[in-house]
Image (cartoon, rainbow, N blue to C red; front, side, top):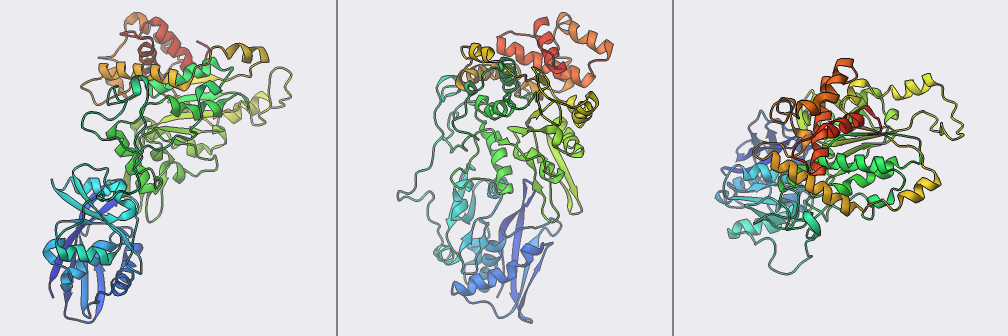
Length: 541
C-alpha cells in the first residue's frame, strides 16, 4: 500500500485550474474519505467509483482510503473528477503502476458499470492542461474526444470504459487517436467563394497556414438569406453597417414589417470566427452543455434569442451551487437578439449595460465571483405600442401617447445610449414592395462588402488588440482615430444642444469609421459623420 498521484482540472467559469488528486490506501477502519473542498456531486463520486471498480472486476481495497484534491482552496464541482479518483485509488492499491498515472490528466464521469460518460467543459479543461506542460496527455470519454482534440499539441486518449483504460495503463502505452481504422468522417469547414474563402485573410476567412479545417456549427436557419426581406432598404443597410463594425441595433416598427426576419439574417452577413475566437465561443458552449454532438467546434457566430420571460440569471448567468453562463455569454462573438424588447423586465434589460461596456460579465454569488466573456452584437426589436396595431394608414390603434411613451420607456435611457443605430421599420405598400424587389441583394453579396470593410479596419488596427471599430476605446477614438474637425462639426453642434451625450459621441464616431470602411475611404468625412449621427438619433439619413 502506498500513495499515488494523478491530475485533473477544476473549472471556475470558463477558466481551468490544475488539480492534483492523491490517494492513500492505508491501515484503519475501512471507508473512503474525500477532502479538498468538494461539492455535493463530487462527494457522491465515492459510491460511483466504488461500484465502477467492483463491476469492472477490480478489487476494492478493504482499508481506509483517503483522497485529497490539491489545492484545497480551489472549489471542485461536478463529476469530471470520477476517473482521476478511480485511477489514483487503483494506483495506490497496486492495480496499475503508480508511475504511469502521475503525468496524464484524467477527465470523465464513471457509470456504475464502469463506462465513461461525457462531461461538460472538456475544451476549457484541456486548454488549461495544455498550459501546464509542453507534452500533455489527456484521457477523456470517447464522446468528448473530438472536442478535446481541437487543442493543438495535446495527446488525447479516448477511453470507452474503466477496464479498457486499466489494460492500457498496465501495458504502458495508449492507442493512437484518431484511430488508424476508418471511422465516421469528420465534417470539414465548407469553402466559400469570394473574399471569405480559403484565399482570404485568416482573421475572417478559411484556415490560415498550418491550420486544419474544423467542423462548423450550422447557422440558425440554413436557408435564410437577406434577399428574403423586401421593402426595407434602410433596415437592410443598417444591418450591413451593423455586421461590418459589430455595432448594436434597435429596430422600432409595427408587427409584420420584418424586424425578426432581419435579425435572423444578420448571422448570414458575418464572417467566420477566427481560430482564437472560435475556441473562446466553443469553451463557453462546452461549459454550458450546449455543444451539438456532431459539431465540436463553433466556427460561426452564435445567434441567441431568449424569450421575454427569461430571468436576469438566464440572461447574464448565475446559479446557486454551479454558476452557468447566461445568454450574453452564449452570444459571445455573435448576436444577442431581444424580440419584443419592452416586454422584458426593466431590471433584466438594465443588466445588459455592464457587458455592453466591458465585454464581459461578472456574476457574484456566495461561492465567489466568476467572470464570463460577453462581447456581442445586441439587436433589439420593439413595437411602438403595447397593442401592436398599426397607427397609420387607417389603423385602429387606441393607445394614448402616454401609454406608448410608458411602454417604450421600459427601454431606459442609459441602455438606449449604448445602442449605435436606431432604425424605424415602417409598413410598405404594394408598390413599394414591388419596386424594392429589383434592389434586394443576397447575403453573399452583402457579406463580401462586410468582409472587405472588416479587412480595411483590421489593416488600420494592426498592432492593436482590436479588430473591429466597435472595440476601439474612447481614448484612442479621440486621439489616433479622431476624424477631422470638419467631419466632427455635425456632432459638436449636437453636443452643444444636449441632444448627444459623450458616450453617444463615441458610438457615432465608431459608426462613421464603419461607413468609411464600407465606402473604401481612408477616413470618415462630414457625410459619414452626418449619416452616423442620423442613425444614432433614429432619423432617416
